[in-house]
Length: 188
Length: 188
DNA sequence: ACGAGTTTTTACCATATGGTAAATGATTTC
DNA sequence: GAAATCATTTACCATATGGTAAAAACTCGT
Image (tube, rainbow over all chains, first blue to last red):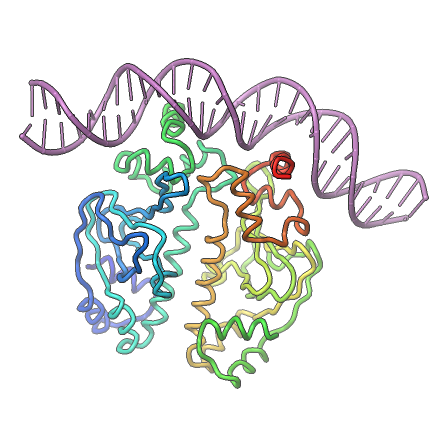
């Protein structure tokens, strides 16, 4: 669980005893490839932190196409936070792209740790903030052409090209699989 | 300043006296169309809350083209928060698209209010979070075609079509001005 | 190792968007 | 109010990407 500890320490000040308390409130979840962590239409009940593997957020658009909204990899927080906070149904799936190992907080523990750890509320909010920044910083830039977006994707997620299905990457980049396949060919 | 009060109250609990304290730490800034609130290359020193008008975040890409990254309208927070927090140079300009009236916090006041108002730290972080969600929720969806993106834009910002230069909207949507002009024609 | 299923590549043509340029329309300045 | 500047529209052709379909390459379970 060192990864989670490092992640928290980089964000806020918290002592050893408090870290142990945080850890005591978590559980480890192993997800097989393709399994869901949370689903569209349901109220998110848990916050995850990815220890190993890659997850993605995805949804179905009005044409029934499956669209990848984001990738979340090791060392990052995973939750549809607006809906988690508001107790409203999520509009996306959080799905494992590979086998994953995840630290899980229940809603109760996630919130109640604020009562026992001074500053947990602040740490929580900063973790969520950081998670959002990551997402927006890495997400494809709409004013770039498809090839440039793919090259940036490779820089942001160097290990993904061979681990993640082309279709997931294509919908993330906003192109068809065929186009992405052609782009890969042109790059070679 | 009712707008700012409402905004804060919707986010956290804070009493009348505390609100007055917050307000006493702010200044009102009037920006003329095209003026900058902050600039690329400089360390952001202020947090703004827009009372009237529309601002945009923009930058120059490696081809020298001016790209609009986001619009921020009335009732929303405006700041390049990652760089504000890290004391690092911003990579974008925050520019007035129309004449604007803005509530301004200096960095000192923004941070030190946490010492006098219990819970300000949490409110601060939630305001920033909400600001980020707004931005990502409204930003154009890369898997949609240009016409769909423009129609969504109109829903998100109904008052913008005639107030904001076409070039700004085009680069926000990831199309050329000519394409956007053609799209407008097709919609009519 | 085989076959069924899945994923990726290729090919062909249709279409949307880009690039360049010029014409029109709007706004500012003197 | 005329000239100058800036913003928007239109036109033309080039190019990138999409849609459909099929072939090829992988994967998985037996």
